[in-house]
Amino acid sequence: MKLVIVTAVEEFQKDLLKLFKKANIENFSSSDIDGYKNGSSVLMASSWFPGEKFGNESRLFFSFTEDKNIDALFNLIKEFNSNLETNNPVKAVVVPIEKFI
Image 1: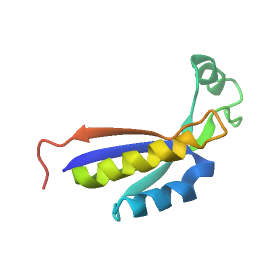
Image 2: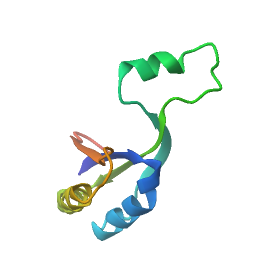
Image 3: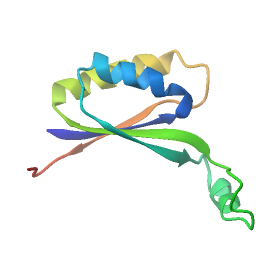
Image 4: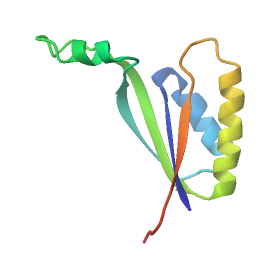
């Protein structure tokens, strides 16, 4: 079992839900996050006007799943990213799990 973590801009949420389903990853969690491209955005976010948003609305998905499902998901994400017209590819990482209950 491994932990797969996927990040994407908010606009891709429905697409990612479909990719998770195609990869047979039925159990996962997600959260709203703000994504930043460079350090200057972080500096602007700590301005005097904290109500202003400078980050990109993004989603973080994660799931504890098997290697075969992760391999399928990575292939689907690679295909998805190859057809993008934006500079915001879906990113994914895998973290091995030493112990779990």
